[in-house]
Image (cartoon, rainbow, N blue to C red; front, side, top):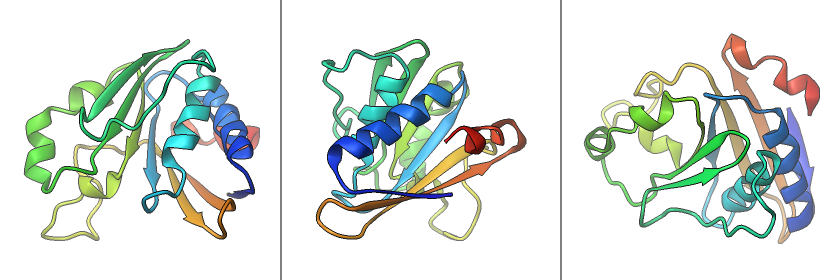
Length: 159
């Protein structure tokens, strides 16, 4: 499913709608270049999951994981600064990913082994929502949302 937005506010609304559809244990992978809108979409998703609109949501580039309390707890994970899959394995992300929290992961392409980047994601993430964000113009973004796994199928009918 492809959805386009033409403003920061509309990206927040899209995230809010997505967040309202999520359930415990959902994993959302956010693909996109720097400045594509991953953090803005995450802010909207967090609002949809019950976080106060005034709560500051920032990308955990240096802390790697931020935790937020919504109607479902949220793990916001940023893998940008990690250079190898071995570093990711050492973090023990499985504890976050396979919990009852919703997990939002920026730069998930780092979850692939360097030896074969065409390989499936490591860490056994079979059920997931992949969001590929592309920049069309200054404020225009296209969100290509793919649901992978049987548990997620109903989500696409809601959006």
